[in-house]
Length: 328
Image 1 (cartoon, helix red, strand yellow):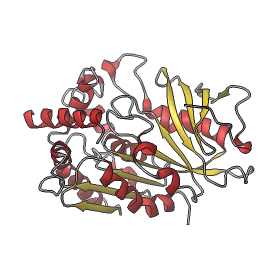
Image 2 (cartoon, one colour):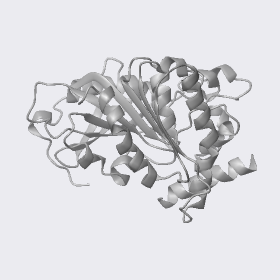
Image 3 (cartoon, one colour):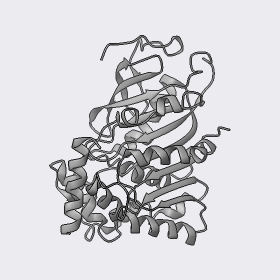
């Protein structure tokens, strides 16, 4: 676990226990000759190709009120098929990380090389919580959800021939985002996968965990969705557990480790944090069962809140994601 994220995990656990060189674009994705702008006003203002398939975009987002980085990985056959559209797979970062985490920590570029999918890894901000922030009801609060679900998709259609089929997966707070997006935008995503995600935001202890994540980035916890008591309706609107009925018809994959006891003694804080999320993940799975919503669920003994386990779970979830994308 990178040192920054290890300290972040320790901070959350403590709170819980106490409460490059430019590369030319491929011919079928020639460098932008003019500004690419979505109807919502989002604009691609920068493009840096890392290799023939990977490009980092800078997107000016009216919803967030800032310019944000997005990494896009093209399928191997992209340049050879200039007239087709491509399904889109969103991969969401975790807390206190960034948009590069999936390519830094996994072999996702190679793993998806032969799949006919456009892969996008957008920034979710420093907390990694891709949501519309409440910010005490003030106008102009950052809205990462609109940025990722609406603004970015419009730009991908224009610039990279994105099709209508979408799936979303994420780790930790990105796992929250994956299930929240699917529940809050019914029918938009054919599949959603969460790896060690916060899936019941109002379960015992979860507001404390979320508050610690927000506070670590020098923000007041109430800026997220307000008070869990006074702004309970807002918390409910953003809670995958409370909105689970909207997941009917979406292919789902949910994985979660128990943390302690486990076999990884070298990452105690990651094991404790994984264990903190154990009961709320079970509660979410029981809610799906009660609603007669099928899901592939993998609850495993031990494990830590870190990439070695999430890498395995992503590959295990790929058949679910591929089916949601319309791939065979």
